Length: 171
Image 1 (cartoon, one colour):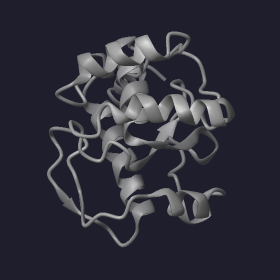
Image 2 (cartoon, one colour):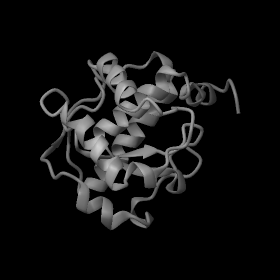
Image 3 (cartoon, helix red, strand yellow):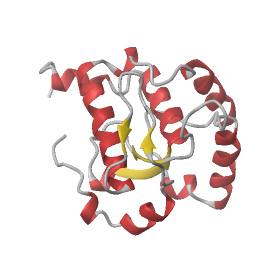
Image 4 (cartoon, one colour):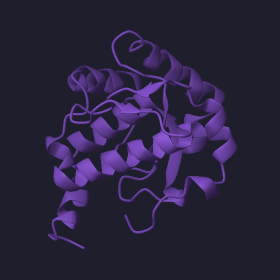
């Protein structure tokens, strides 16, 4: 990443902190990640999550990555519920967080209440698949939003550039 994300200077820091679910441990967001005790604050946990994901993308092309045991189901469900979503485009955060957008996402996410650990846990999501995690390009999202969007991006090969850049294959 070109500039590390600094949670202490994030403009929406207080909003994020209010929305995080407080838990005693961070469940395994990725199969290769061991259960980790919660850090001092939920925002540090979210930053750890994004750093872990980025580190994985640097080691494995996104198109070969599996985020959950249910990637296929999540992907198909997401395509049905959000047919207009284009994984190559920048996310319209205002639309996503509008009253109608929140309702659509709430209905989508509740399907995973019993099957995905921390499905509604707060995390960070890149608004644009062409960008690294930076303060201007990172938004607060729920875990299921992250999974649905990143699985779509990975299936479209839109995160492979991270691996290629890390391996020195492109700049």
